[in-house]
Image 1: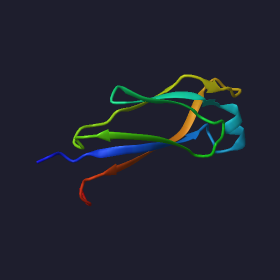
Image 2: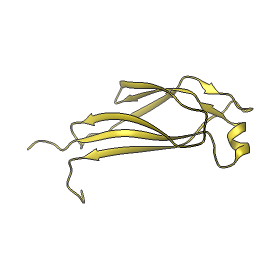
Image 3: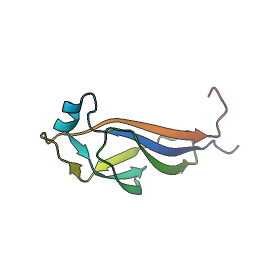
Image 4: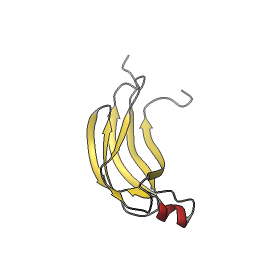
Length: 103
């Protein structure tokens, strides 16, 4: 029997601490990032300097859904705030699978 697969379709990133305008402007935000999945480079992305959600398409297929996936995001450069701390407020992962419902 062939193992089930799943596909990471993309990431949604909220860049910066967007709870308030002051927090957003104080903290530094990620600018250039590098995304790897399971140690394999997938893509480099320049994020916009906005608190709005940013969608990044990945289309990474994992052929065995029983194995873990390690997503690594490296921040290479930043939009400077008054603080040197870099904030990515939230990261969401989108995926698709051939696994039956309820598993």
